[in-house]
Amino acid sequence: MRKLSTAVLVAATIASSGFFSAPVSAEPYWQCVTFARFFSGVQIFGDAWTWWQGATGKYKRGGAPEEGAILVFKKTPRMTRGHVAVVSDVVTDRIVQITHANWSPINGRRGQVEKDVTMIDVSEQGDWSEVKVWYGPIEDLGGKVYPTYGFIYKSGPLDVPSTYAAAGPTVVSR
Image (cartoon, rainbow, N blue to C red):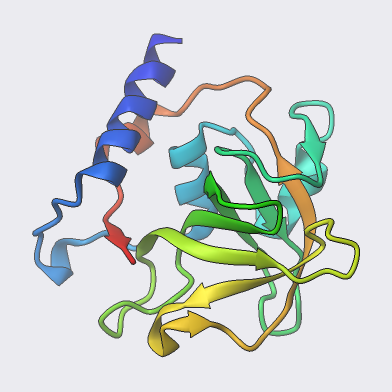
């Protein structure tokens, strides 16, 4: 538990500090799953779209956003590995802020972390089964609608591997 507390504290400090002055070449390349595991403490492995099934019996799942929950995107022809994003703030029942990695290219470079970007539920049922996500290059919600499975909640075992604690993510606030 001490490892978790330390790793979560390091992740929270890094994510909230806003102080990232490393040259571009020194910045790590973050995949969404590596970042979500590091940032949330949820220990699921594999491509993002497999996290929904991977949470079975380990973590509570549902259709309502909560701060710290992970939204699991389904794979699509253009997003063949799916995507995962951590809810950083619930604004309304249909608008949240997320923190995630490897979505928008930042300064022409993928593999970076975006902090507190907008995601909205556009599903007819209001169940978060379809969302739109802020896309940095156009500085607006993207035109695409992404299908999702739902949210994984941090109600399971929480043990962040020490390898993630050593290399904190570069976070870009929008």
